[in-house]
Length: 321
Image (cartoon, rainbow, N blue to C red):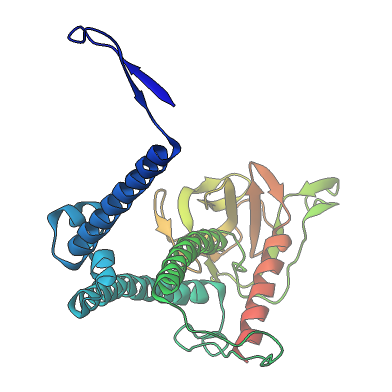
């Protein structure tokens, strides 16, 4: 290979002849220079890794750098940092479990589950067949244990939120059930007249009876079939001494022909509270209680509610046995 060199200082062009041996020596020199630079860079990185370099701290985390340097103190710091983080997470999970146990006991009481049937404080029984055909079990490393701990913490938090929603729903159902007129308003064994069409005792014509009549001696206590607010306590030409209770949810009960009334408009009465006495005032042939249940202004058969209350009592008695 011939190279021609030209310059203003030269009176004439000069030529340089390169043989194959020149090219081989040039290539070997370039390779030696590259290897020397690589060795210098490797030595520099090893020195930085073995020392406490600010530059290394910026590009590599402290725990990883310490572990890479095989420094026992750095490894201890790494383990302690992870143990401290897991201890904090464990404390949070313990607090969540305490809250979950408290919620579980409240839900258990609202649902009527016996404590001996489901005790939140006892560990559930577990077991299973040991399968020797599969791979042998291995211990979790630090990263896998941290991931499992985080997943369990999220699962506990979700279950706690779900339990709170269930508690709210059950509490609402319990309050609503107490506002339903499911208690028989008088302690008598039979009713004299049922709900529906009948012959009117005064006119002898067919008429619709909007409630049921409970016969009993004058002065027999009348109790509220459910909790509510007194919206009427007055004398009515047909019903005599009458009172009405608003139970919410557009449910109202009426108690008629009473001899005495012990509440007034605006009073809040409890379920089973003594509110009046049986009498024979108004359009009546004898001492009895005329009892009505209205839903959204439409008269309903009171037996539907009273039978539901009797079924609840029977279920409660059976659960206590």
